[in-house]
Amino acid sequence: MFIQNKEQKINNLKSLVGSISHEARNPLSAIRTASDIIKNNLDEAIEYIDLISISSSHGLSVIDIILQNIREEEIDASKFTNLSMSNVVESAIIGYAFANATEKDLINVDLSNDFNFKGDKTLMIFVLLNLLKNSLYYRAKINIWLDSKNKQLHFKDNGIGIPADKLESIFDSFFTSDKKGDTGLGLPFAKRVMLAFGGDISCKSKTGEGVEFCLQF
Image 1 (tube, one colour):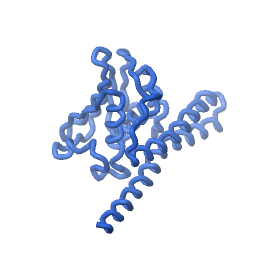
Image 2 (spheres, rainbow, N blue to C red):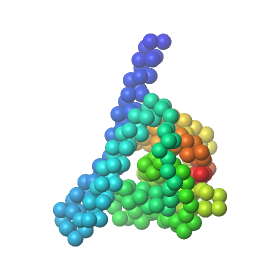
Image 3 (tube, rainbow, N blue to C red):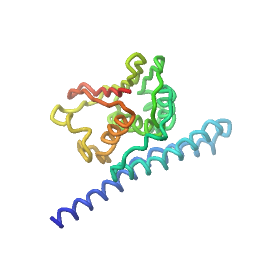
Image 4 (cartoon, rainbow, N blue to C red):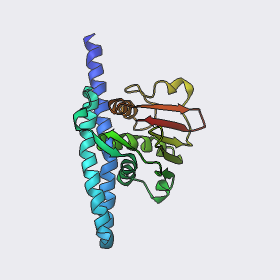
């Protein structure tokens, strides 16, 4: 029993370290890209200084979120505020470190049916960044649209899809699909965030037909 507990602690520590390094890489990459552009083109400096500020804040928040996730601490709802979903989606896309312009062009967004929800902006951005990262790993085309009537955000890609025998486990902690760099923490934490917001997240998928996440608020 002692050996098993020790091995489990070591595995959890490895997952923690891997998750922090993996999730922090995105905002840090955005900061590096913005800094390089500023050095080479001062005319665009203001736009990218804003990106540096957003990405720096996100990077610090990511570390706090992952530690909170590992400790399975309750999400503090006392700081929730009323937010515009279209504004949050726009911030997430601005803060994502796309590999190139071609990758960014894979995303199609329709924010015309905006709605407000009560939650935390940083947590919601973290959820969206994880969905983006998972889909763009496979270079999948992504459609994001809002349903103001039902207060839903839909996130759909045309990637490789998820096999039926794995679909029911994607929200379980540390479950991975053998994808490089995957820690099995992103989707479980997304589930916790949505439940804390008083909503939920669900997924439907078939192998070869992409995935669709529905975020209900």
